[in-house]
Image 1 (cartoon, helix red, strand yellow):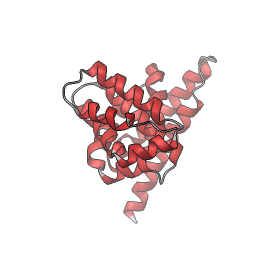
Image 2 (cartoon, rainbow, N blue to C red):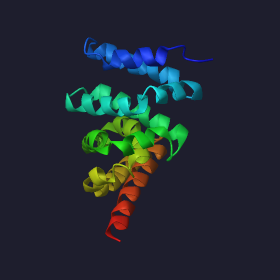
Image 3 (cartoon, rainbow, N blue to C red):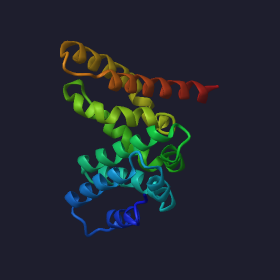
Image 4 (cartoon, rainbow, N blue to C red):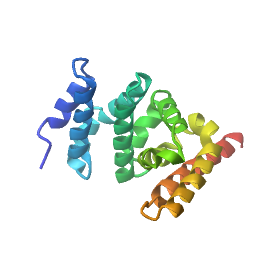
Length: 187
């Protein structure tokens, strides 16, 4: 089964200025349904330059104040990175133009707090996936990410209904990756 041109159609609509923010968020949702767990659609997405376009969309949405779109695009990019691994197309797209996506990711990380664990749960996988290519921008946040991991872990212990282990692990791995890249850069 293929996406029968839907990937290119959605990417075209996302690139157009005529779509409202609500329509654009829905288009990202539709794109996520086509891509998650579907390697052929991901190949079509890659051929259409989708990974770079999605990273650019996240950055553009963040800079224009559309936090919901920035988060949706970033989470989708992180989910695709998790499916492909550290050498996959999503990570390479960020590596190819880190100055576009990485400042937005760093800024989004500044807004995370233990009081809003839902945001932490959504963005921790992105921080984990893109810590290496975005290390330069995340470096100032590394110590705060470790403190946030401790706070989120405490929240998880206090509220047994919350399962925050993945979020905590993601924050810690991101902070470790950023710290390790700083050490490598000094050598």
